[in-house]
View 1 (cartoon, rainbow, N blue to C red):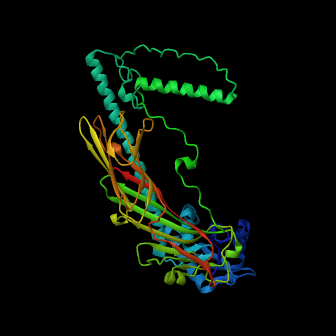
View 2 (cartoon, one colour):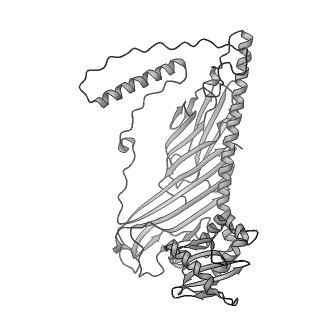
View 3 (cartoon, helix red, strand yellow):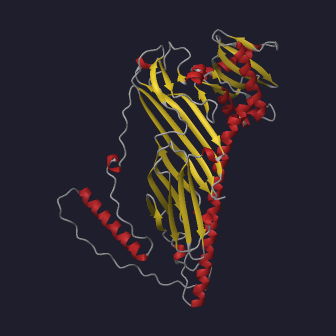
Length: 517
């Protein structure tokens, strides 16, 4: 079957919800729907009507019609089955079958239609499965909303803590008889008030401007004018940094040379791509609680074929045998031979005499895995906070649970409350602290089977609530994927020697957060 479009229409032919699945102009779809009421007549026994070019398959929904427009060569039995499934989806999202209610839920209906039909072909899917897929997207949205609420709550707690600290400083200043200006240590991080705020008896000390900087005579070098401007800007920036360091606003940091090229940074140059290229991309979403409990793990992957040589379009991609009864759920493109993929792990078109479209990235295979169990976690990062009245100690640990992965450039970003700088006691890799963003970054270049775990410890010279150190963000990448999708060979669909090709595989972290629980 080939479904051109699906729509919920009024009896006058006005489309309330419409979705087209193939490349047709919007005006043509609207014209076909406008002609629909004139064709159905008054006979309620028929459920389809044909014109010279298309077939309408429809079902009444009280004062509305559920309509799908297909080609005349489409299988009418499959068309009716698809129509009935779409018609059952409408009451699932609309309490009443009225034009206003359908318009109100237009986006939910379009998303549901997309789960049933892809590129004009019916997916082998049931009504409960459609509900499950739509709820999975809603679950991800709930996780994102929960993380945002945690950030807002932590910001309010930090503001309350700073307000308490300012009140304490004000009372101590009143006892000692010295004026309170509001420019104490607590206000350096942006949480302090204006001078004398909150107290009419507070006095404001006289502001003394810093001594004027020595003026430099203009250089008489014959270099270009732009270089002189850069030198002056650099000199002003250096003087400002030294002044801030003298006032204690920032801590001195080693000078880091600017990055010139990707080669100097150690990044590998882009790999050469053949005229037939297969990319295996996977994205990971992880949300953990501060006590190490898994709240959500979501792995999504896709195999994409890109052709630039039409002579290589009739091919079959052989994969390493996959476990179709395992935790990963696979979904192939509707035009592929599903039997061949299930039995032999080979991606080939249903009609091997046809070829894949050139110059167009085409997703042939998708997979997904969602769980809340620890077994699905490829790499675990834990953060332990031990507060005391005078000092806070934080221990951070990583552990590679899936030793098939080679994790590169592991970065753990930890928020640092207060105004002090953390003192790193020990740890693998390297650390850097930004006084501007109040964030400590722990970097480990490589985590693999030879380096499956490591720890880092730092301290702060004051007590702080453990909730202030969350959320912790984790980033990494890997040239191996969690799902073992591996290209073994690419051959002509009708048999023959191997076809020259290139491939690429990568796992990236879309989100990995440790939130306060």
